[in-house]
Every structure is written in C-alpha cells, then in structure tokens.
Length: 173
Image (cartoon, rainbow, N blue to C red; front, top):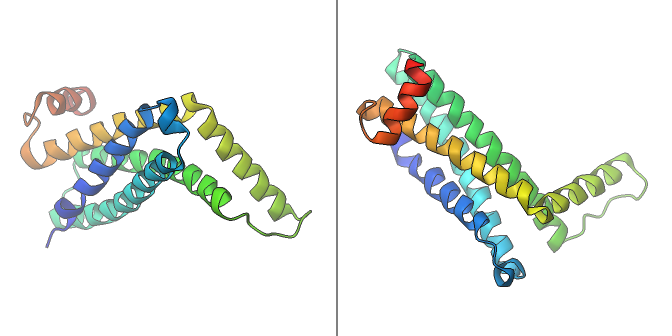
C-alpha cells in the first residue's frame, strides 16, 4: 500500500500555513506568546510530517522500481524543503525551550557555553525578522517546486500551469 499520498498533504498544508503566518507581522500579534507558539507548532509538526513523507516517498519510489530524472528532482527538492524548514523548526524549538525552562547545565562547561550561544543566536534570528521571513519564503518556494514535481510524477507535467513551468525549467532544461 502506498502511504505517500496520505501523508504528503500534511507538510504541504502545515508548512504553507506556517510561511503565511510568518509574513503576518502586526505589532499586536508579534507581542503575544500565542503567535510564537502557533508558528512554532506549525513548523515543528510540519517538519515531522515532512520527514515521514520523505520516508513513505522512498518506499513508493522503490515500488515504482524505475528512478527517473523527474523522480530524483522531486526527491532533491523534498529534501531541500525539509532541511530549510527543519532549520527554522530547530530555531523555534531552541527559543521555545529557552522561554519555558532554562536548561540547567554546569556553568563554565563547553556544553553550557555552546547551549547559551546557540540559544542566543536563535533568539537573534527570530528578532531579526528579515532572516526568518527570507527562510520562510525560500522554504515556500522550495515546497511549491516539490509539489509541482510530485504532481507531474503522478498526473503528468500538464496538471496545472505552475507544474508545467517548473517541469519545463527543471526537467526539460
């Protein structure tokens, strides 16, 4: 049984919704903890589903047997998308941990210094909104390419205008 079509829509929906939410930056929303946790949940759960989707995609590809250029491109963009949103998810997870519970480590240890520095960097990235917005937009573009290539695999490159353009640019070259 091919589980890939069942799981594929979860990361698409969650990560698209996350990207749109990241672009909504009203002062009122940005001051609330809710908005931070809402976006964090979307991106973290979206990445978990993306990892599951990649695994089910590998199983589906093995069932097909034939590895085409289109399939390899789809796999590349799916992995790229997961890495981009995975980086964002790690940033949100580190800040979440820092907000809710200060990690208790032995002061002066290399691990404690590393933790403190990586947490400060994550907080800085979220405060410098252009960085996280840029990552979200790049992730959304990558997600769109992945989806268009996936649609071209299942339904052919003429499934919609976006899939046709992406197919012509990346496959036909």
